[in-house]
Every structure is written in structure tokens, then in C-alpha cells.
Image (cartoon, rainbow, N blue to C red; front, side):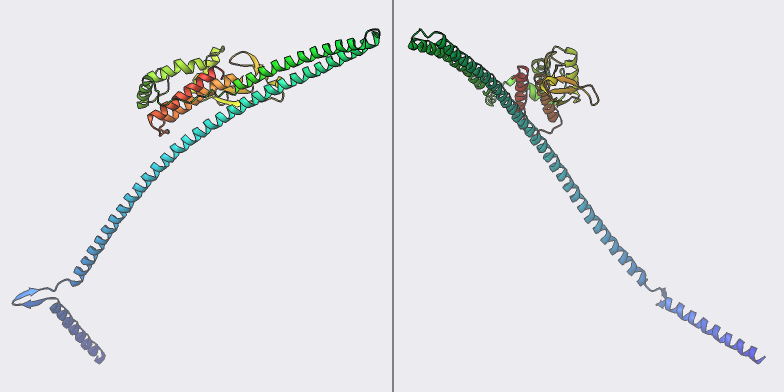
Length: 354
């Protein structure tokens, strides 16, 4: 009984203390001033709002800085793309110029090789004739000796005079033939050494052709009926350059060139006799050191050097036209026109076998 009473007393004391603490907490939360109940300011809440606002302002500034950096990166990328495009165009021009120079060097080397081969052949023939002349002279001397032995009754001076006359006439004939052949060889060499690739006078321009080319550049296209410029080049240069006795193959080669499907390469056999074939375009039996095909897995057609030069001249023209059409040639209209005239001149020379 006493323990129970003691426990109840302690519980009542604890309840009273809790009621007093709750009352104090309520009093601290509310205050009465002049008969008006006021509540204290939410200090912690206002502090957290200010912190969040400052954080938001900082994030906005960071986003603005990021946008500025992204815009700068876009500008750098655009400038880089533009520089890469200009560099690519200049590289294409340089490559085209190097190809042209290599082609000219190859043509000059082939011309020099041709002249050297002709000179060697002429020297071989001349050497053979000299050997033949020496044999004739030996035969004349032997005949003179035999006549000396058989005609002992004649005076020795008369026999020697006759022998000298025969020898001198034979020698004069040999020298005359050598001089004639030497002069012919020198004339041929001098004609072959003339540089037929004359320079274009940039001060004299056909204004009609220049206007046609300028109008074509406004809307460049490949095709004989696409513009007056292309119609003129087809009728005056391309079609005459690709006109061969084999008209069907010539037409298919032109179509393949227009679609950029032509493949042409050197094809040398071990001996000259093996290279002697019938040219697929001209139908002549000649040295066919080249061959051409019209698609990647198509049939190879043997062609002569003359046919190869004519096809190559047309291919060079279409290659430059495609570069202009793609915007890879950054020079002005006048320089591009001069290049077109140069390529047309090459087609004319190739058609004439020069």
C-alpha cells in the first residue's frame, strides 16, 4: 500500500511538471503586447530562403556563363570548319596542279625517249651500212689486187690510178649517203624538240566564250544540252576527240567518262611482238601498251598510245569541270576560264596526235 501511494504521488508530480513546461513553451511562443497576441518572426525559415535565393542566382550566373562558352565553342567550330574547307580546296588545287605537272613531265620524257629510240635505230642502220660499205671497200681492194696479178703487162701507175678512182667514188657515195641521212635525222630531231604547248595570251579573250562560261558557272552541270557552254565544248572538242572507227565503243567510253567510271592503265608485255595488238578503237595493228575498261569489273580493251592520250585529255577536262561544280576551285572566273581553254587545247592536240 505504501509503495503504491508513493508511486501515485511521483506520477502526479511528473504530470504537474510536464504541464508547467508545456505552459512555458506556449508562453514563449506567444506574447501579449498591448492586448495583442504576437508570434515571433520565423528567423530560421527566412535565413534558408535567402540562402536558396542566393544559390539560385549563382546557378543562373553559371548557366549564363555556360551559354557564353557554348556560343564561343560554336563560333570556334564554324571557323575551324571554314578553314578545313578552304584547306581542302587548296589541297585539291595543288593536287590537280601536281598531276598536270607530272603529266607534262611524263609527256616530255616519253617524247625524249621516242627521239632517243629513233636516234638509236638510225645509228644501228648507219652502223650496218658502214659495215656494208667497209665490206664493199675490202672487195674493191681485193679486186684491185687480183687485177694487179692478172694484168702484169699494164703499167703499175695506171692500175693504181684506176684503183684510186674506184675507191674515191665509193667513198664519196658513202659520205653522200651519210650526210643525207644525218641531215634528215637532225631535221626530224629539231622538229620533235619544238615545244607545241604554247602559252595562252591572257590579254586576248573571246568575250562570247567567256560569257557562256560565266553563265554556266551560275548553274554548273555536266551534259551536252545543259548549257550553251557545254554544247560548244561537246561539239567542238569532246565529240571530235572521241571519234574513232569503233563508234559503239567510243560512245560507251564517253558515257563512262560522264559517269566517272573509266579506268585506264599501262599494260606492257615482255616483248614488242607481244604488245602488237589490234587497237580496240582504231582497229589498227600497233603497239597497244595501254588498256581501258568502262566499269569496275568490266572487260579490258587494249588501246594504242594515241587513243589513250585522247581519252586522257577528255578525262582531264571532266575532272576539272567536276571540281568547279563542287566548289573546290577557289580562283576567280578569269583564271578558271583560262584553265578551260588550256584543257580544250590539250584535247585538240591529242586529237591531232601531238
